Length: 401
Image 1 (cartoon, one colour):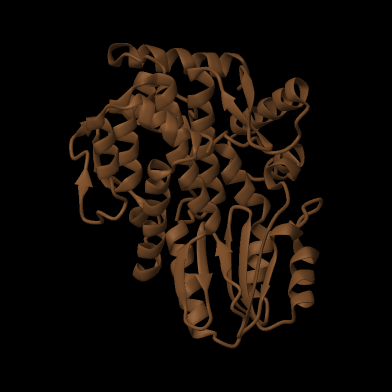
Image 2 (cartoon, rainbow, N blue to C red):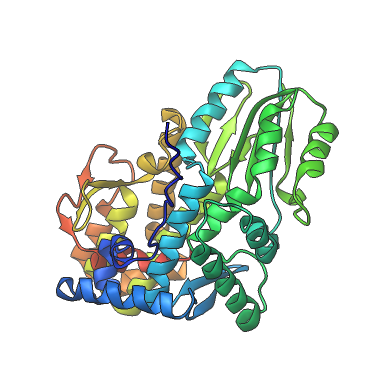
């Protein structure tokens, strides 16, 4: 039987076709792309990538909360980094985690392991602490990664180091999630096989374990197998043993195990939703755009079906769709609390926001705002085509909230 050498899976990586396949519908309006020049643009990017030895052009940093977020500036960097991420995910066999699946399995495990304890924690400054340069060095030994991908990663690491004095994985750049998964592969494998662990879940830097150890032992088990210099965030660590009534907060959900098992939305996420309502009302006072305010409040207050140009299927937006694993009674209660919060603002006699709204809105507009309810669970709004620009305009006021 003749011997056949293994075919190189990336014979012409970063070819014009590779680059063109990285373009997404939103790029056309974000980057002012024209379908007529797509082939020429893709070829120009591919040629530039190869002629510059897989260089990254520029990366910008912005502050969104307490941690820096990085963005690729040019279409060249956006598309080349997407292709690098695609190659990494294929070569590293990175598993795709879905939040709803993690919660569904966690709840089933809690229901089946009524006498086990729960340990929930996260990793302190996860992306910022991972050593990007060391991670690249560990990838160089892998034979299924093209050399140009390694050079591209090195170029990105160099720009982050020299321009921003940053040595970790850059939040906001799509390759970071893939590389973060790779960085913790040994921890995942160890904890999945460890004795006395009934269930293990990790979603990026959030960890939840159902176990039969004492709390000190399970924490030591994680710390001993966590890659250095990563550490656990003790301020977010929870130890829950039956029959504790302490709620478990994980991945935006709030799970109570006693006296009965139920699943709701975490208080932090509810607070964020209330902030979005307030920001929408405050933005109206600046812009006087009542139609936009109405679209925002309708977007927040109900289930929205949207047919967006460029997407093959409709998308649904709303609390019940965002948190599908919630118990019906719990999410009903939380939606009622949002309704009370919203109407409490409108009815307030002292809150300055309510006073300014009453002074600005017409009687008809005031009546329209009062008619909005978060409890119209079966009403579906916006059942029409909406562009990416429209969606961005609705949500940009709470982009970082």
